[in-house]
Amino acid sequence: MIYYNNDNNKETSTHKFSSLEKSNLNWRSATHMADEENKAAWLLVVKTLKILPYHLPPLGENGVKVRIKAVGICGSDVHHFKTMRCANFIVKKPMVIGLKSLAIGDRVALEPGISCQRCNFCKVGRYNLCSEMKFFGSPATNGSLANQVVHPANLCFKLPNNVSLEEGAMCEPLSAGVHACRPGPIGLITLLAARAFGAPRVVIVDVDDSGLSLAKDLGAYDILQVSTDIQVDVIGIFRYRNTWPLCIEFLRTGKIDVKPLITHRFGFSQEDIEEAFKTSARGGEAIKVMFNL
Image 1 (cartoon, rainbow, N blue to C red):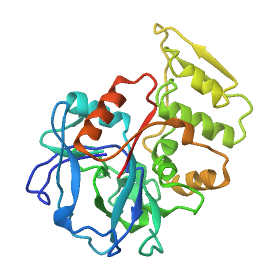
Image 2: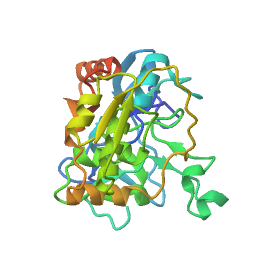
Image 3: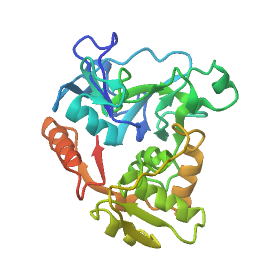
């Protein structure tokens, strides 16, 4: 994820990696880092990322401090990286890219959208429609490509022992559903979700055949390359809600295997973040690019 600068970070500011995707909870342990040692990847200007200090905001009444171990690059991160905007979300200043019953050392996956918990939508459980939603890596909310972040405890979901941190980081794209009609990470992970729910025939459609062969390998009943001159009206929902527990259960039971979707892995150095974003921006064989911190 990428972070934007705010009053909690006087050094600089920047953008998001959509979806924290996943992390390792760790207060005061041997791997604990003081705030002054905490670093994040900041989007400064178009195609310019720098690893700089990131001072965490106060924990608050229901917050927890999370040590990030794995986080992936989202498609919206690439848009911000290349153009400093994604739809109506515009990077106007430097920004950082990129549970209940919790205990120190728990391994968790983070749901990246923080709703107000006060509006009518939130009160009836439709928090995905909250007009005050603050989403990791969407300007001006910082993302999670950092050593540590602060996050509401109720949006941190414990991972079973047999689910890796990288798999936990894939809960966000697994929750997102189909993005247009293409075999990118969202489309392919939705193929896996459809198969896990028992769909006997899943057809993947795209205008480019670069990801169609992988879709076939992942169990698509058929693949179809289409032209670009056909208009399709699509009606759907906005964001997602209450999906993390089900995603983690699918990963725990093996109904969904997200590991083949992680095609590239990088560390957390200046050279790594530059190459990772170049790789993700090129597309092609890069499906999900993952950072291991």
